[in-house]
Amino acid sequence: MQLTIKHPFLCLPVVSHPKDTRVLKLFDGEKLLLCVYFPFGEAAADNGTYSYEYLSPLPVSEWMGRTLTLSAEFPAGFEDAVTQTDELPVSGEVHPAVHFTANAGWINDPNGLVYDNGTYHLYYQHNPFGVNWNNMSWGHATSTDLVNWEHQPIAIAPDALGTIFSGSCVVDKDNTAGFGAGAIIAFYTSASDRQVQSMAYSLDNGKTFKKYARNPILTSTQRDFRDPKVFWHDATDKWIMILAVGQEMQIYSSANLKDWAYESSFGEGQGAHGGVWECPDLIELPIEGTELKKWVLICNINPGGPFGGSATQYFVGTFDGKKFVNESPKNTKWMDWGKDHYATVTWSNAPEGRHIALAWMSNWQYANNVPTTQYRSGNSVPRDLSLYTSAGETYLKSSPSRELLKLRGKEEKKHSFKVDRTYNMDKLLSDNTGTYEIEMTIKNRNAEVIGFQLFNSKGEEVDIYYNLVEKKFAMDRSKSGVVSFSSDFPVLTLAPIEGNSEMTLRLFVDKSSIEVFGDDGRFAMTNLVFPSEPYNRISFYAKGGSYAVSSFKVYKLK
Ligand code: FRU
Image (cartoon, rainbow, N blue to C red; front, side, top):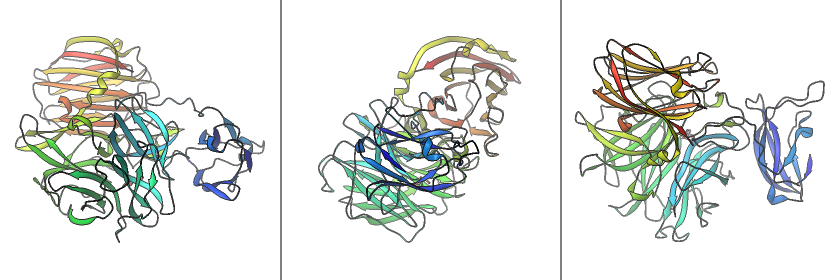
């Protein structure tokens, strides 16, 4: 079909669970502008209408006035349903309010997290043409405060070497690569029938990238060879690249970011091995209350997480620029004890020496099937990482980044009360629209179980409790709302806890997710939920004794 471009967006009608994904091409005369897999809807029924669920926006302003050709095996009626608009078409579907999501389309891993000149860049795995994993590109958003994001055009699109898988960015302050001092350099995996590492550089503050003419920069015979994380290692004066390769991590070094030398591999016999290792990170973190620092290797694994599917494990140890050594090989450590916290990586070049992590808030077991229509998936809230020691072991602490305090709107109510049976406290959340933060301090007297349920008028509920006998913190989402899209979804997740007499909890509830931070991030638990109306009621209960909620605050967010 031919179209004369008169408005900045082409609106292409698609579905969220395509039976059939076909190739769609866009040409300007002979010149191929775009070639993607496209989620067509159903061919016209007898009454001639093509059936689709939402409009996939294609920005076309650069071809204004030109006549372009869209070509595919179109289902009957498709061509009549294509329109053009001045504004991005939105479905009216409610997105999370304080978590990053794309305006439209699929997202997975955060990529290329880098801070430069006052701006946090978030690139991310993105399919702009549908809400299933496909056509991997680096989407882009920017922020000055980590919590308010501005959408930007696609930063890196597929090319002859393949689609653009996960990776990282660095700021090349000293021009070691020769693209210019201060260039932002992206490292990513070019994925086709093989996986190779490529680089691209930006000379306009991360807006646009030019691919390096000599890509790929690193190849292998291994099938799973991906997700390069690059950082500067002061002690050896070298760049380091850590890569996920099957079920291990490989470490390379370089002086110029282009030529890489293999240093070592890490992984055999260490931690969980229920699936492939992906999206590594390697950072040096301070241990709270000491002058010491230790290295942490972040290792995302899929499947093989503690509750099935994807999860983030980590190792604590030493790194000398060549080799990472895990200090406690017998212990498997998890960064978050929910089911929806994956592909965690940290910002490069963050100010004040901060190590700020961001995760993709989903799980490969059901990510493609979660019940959203025009957008699919978002990120976690940003978390500042540090280390703490408990019983001789060093663990990662994930504290909600301080910028999240900015999102607090009206403080709704402050309460303190004693719980020795069940209390329905309907009014605490009653005028809430599903996006709020709860902060509470609990003083245990002699309870065995300290719990509360978030629920709504439909009887949908999430049960959240401490079991102090078993020293576990739990979240049960089996009756949380829409759960039937996957048998892997309705589950109970558990985190080991210390179980002190005083405990603090922060919960971020945002339409379709709950993130819990215990004792300022000594444990974290992130789970998706799909209630059919907001959880605007709460009920507390105690078993086997009583406890006091010495402080309970609810904040509307944004
Ligand atoms: C992790 C991952 C990465 C890969 C990307 C592809 O979720 O599988 O290993 O680069 O997603 O989208």
